[in-house]
Image (cartoon, rainbow, N blue to C red; front, side, top):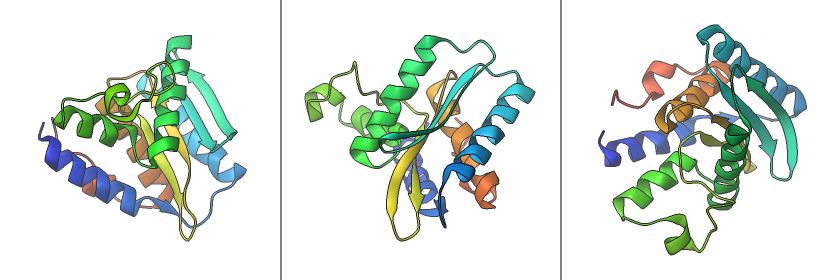
Length: 165
């Protein structure tokens, strides 16, 4: 895996995957899509979609555990703080051999720099929330979210997917 290339790809994902509008119905459609995909693939994940301060969709699929719920909360907090994907933050910290605690004074009990939380952006409004998946390896969590956003927004996932690791 090439961190610099992944960071460029994530920036392109974040730039492209922007909703024209986002409301409770949109959150439900996105969450239901993620749930259907997880069920069809036999994945055990927690799915959390929220605008900042307001839960919009939550589901546990398969053998997801309370640990997955906590990871989703912490990764979503990271998006809320930085307004970009938790995976990008983790890769940047990896590049600098840093942590959220030593670089940003953020407590690991409330923040996680692991992949799986992606910013929900709305044209003209910017980042308004996050969609988070937890339960798979972090790169797979991130890619599942990107795949779902592509499906919902009509983009070709193959063009936005991270390079094979």
